Length: 154
Image 1 (spheres, rainbow, N blue to C red):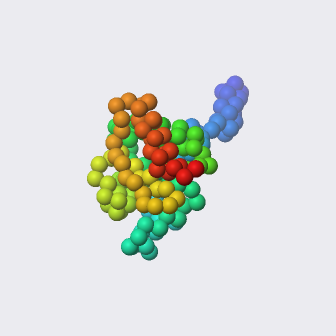
Image 2 (tube, one colour):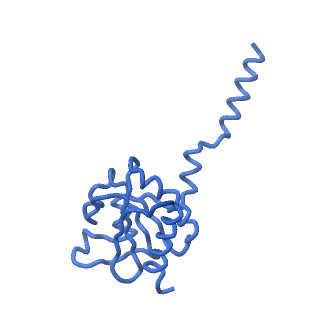
């Protein structure tokens, strides 16, 4: 009985220090999930500014409109995470779940996913959709858009 109790306490103490993998990955994510309320503060308050685009961010951003059930969206997710790390401090990468944030998707006319909104510091945003033939071409496509739309003035 003492051996069983010792094993139980050992396992219990070990599990107290274990890190939940889901918690660890969410803390280290460079691409940030945002809601409508986040969008209104960090990107653009389209309820207040109904006539003109007024970007409110402190650096350009790329917004990924996605859904968990979307195959191409699952392909782009790790690519965007990698690019968010690569361009950290230069751009923000946000993710909008269209199933949770239907109003945001509707406001920007998102009818197919994945869709991507590139918001430069100055000027109007640019919307693109779809991915390239493979992961490497998709990553290169994103880099091209980031460099030509978001970082063109640097």
